[in-house]
Amino acid sequence: MANELNIDPSTVVTITRQYGSGGRQVAEILARKMGVRRYDRKVVAMAAENLGGDVDFDEVLERSYNAPENCTGNIGDYAYERVPAHNRMYIEQAKVILGIAKEGGAVFLGRCADYILRDRPKTYSVFIYANDAFRAARARSDQYGDISLKDMDAVDRQREQYYAYYTGQTWGAPVNYDLMINTSKLSLEATADLILDYVRKRQGKE
Image (cartoon, rainbow, N blue to C red; front, side, top):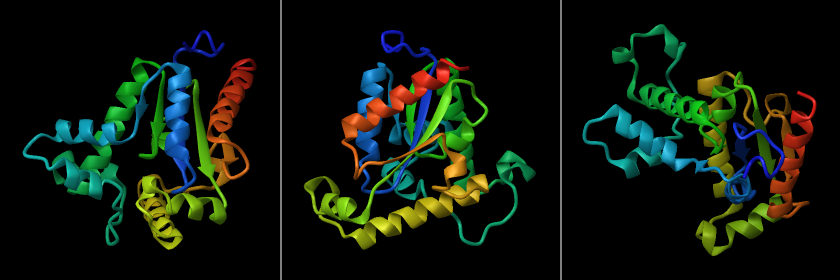
């Protein structure tokens, strides 16, 4: 499928998204067009399995974006056994992401995949965002459970803290991404096509 699109079959796209921007659907559409798998919650499940023991997946998933408030220091400073549980989960997720990317093409949604794969060739990072009116309209839909824009912003703050804690970078800062797309100005299908067009143009010069 990737060859039919005139892109390298080992291409990986990471998508970071503002809550309510449609980034999850964009990732799904993009993965289908590329003929690869989309990874988001699956990464958490695989990491939890690697950690072993009696793991409650729903609890792990709920806590997977929690950034500790009172922890400092580089996670690489400690022996693995002494690393706090939240850090061990991040480490295992990073291992899973790196392992999947080593095998070939994929689309990753969130999980700091853009940072984890920043040195991998044929990897392109995208940030998806939208204006408040677009997000508020989606917040009222069944897909989001009729939540408020304030609730969406709270989720984004949690993601921002998580990203900052584990990467030392600013979530949503343009310097961290190859491409930033406002989905309130473009359909989700067209957004996926724009990403593919960008990848083709980049690979034509690499």
